[in-house]
Image (cartoon, rainbow, N blue to C red; front, side, top):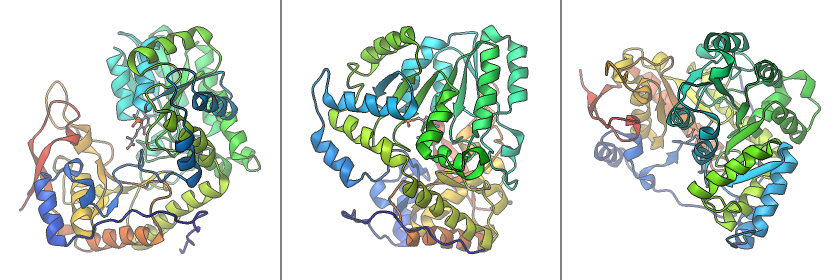
Length: 461
Ligand code: F0G
């Protein structure tokens, strides 16, 4: 099937040169990085798909905003502009800037959670899970079953399993459930969207048991675009109207603005109407982030963020963004390369288990493919599988993940059709000689979040 590339609704005004390296140089760089993708120097990477977070290209309007940023410690003009943009888009009364997504979690979660409590999500992102646990609570994932089969195509694979969620609430007792977190889109399940129908159902059950709902809103605009394409009720609504509707079904949100708000640094907390909670959020912000009106950011960042929020929901931009992913996915379909299907909003998650069946989970197929992509083509991706999951904290045994993915996270407005073609060609070449790709063993690992720092070596059989 041919899918036409949707042309960029922008032109290029400034370029950043990337270094061209030989295969031999890349092999050496990978060895020096101890076969850890996070150990590579950014300048040794040709196409950097490690994350779509903070790696996006700002527009000329955002850069102009940077110069307009008001750096007043208290009461900066840029702060008021950002608050107004947040209120306008999300319909929430209180908007608090913070320096990134995990800062929003650090400020808000301890106000709602404590030891002995649980939080339930369609799927927690790693830092979100970590902040639930740091607040003393336990995090429970409750995504729909269909998300777990990469070849099963469904429109909303990011959804919460509402029936199971209610069973978990009953099992623990409603008073023990501190929060429900709806991650939109569902990053860990492959950037898969959540329907408004699902948000409504979750909110209804949450209200029945008097449990607060928080939206983890990093990729809210991509989610709204999927709703427009796939949920009949919203096909004629604007993205702005859909965003408003999505946020009706929550009480608060935490947002990493480094994704859909197209900035390099920034985050937000939104509170629908609870003034008492807002006072507490302000207190924590002052302790951890800085004064309320800058929240760990420069005035220039606040300015760029308030502009980026609107650029992120522009329909021409979202059409191009989604089109780029669809183009990539269609080429993989032609080549018979399996991925979490249909393609998600911000990334393509290759099913490394299917491509490298000779590598068992404890030799990390997702990681093995990531290393090979760097050696073959200078492309940096990362493992979302057993390597990232780590060991059982009690037995120290390697755990087996539900998926063995290699994530191609696509930065916004950065790479072109030719770059996507290079990604596809590299995957095809690796698939042709898949049997030659070695598995990996860990030679050193730190006690927590090991995937960022571990040293590895190939297993030559
Ligand atoms: N929530 C989600 C769904 C995320 O994807 C991320 C970050 C965060 C929260 C934390 O935000 O990085 O601004 O502190 N995801 C990045 C990624 C890092 O690569 O997927 P942050």
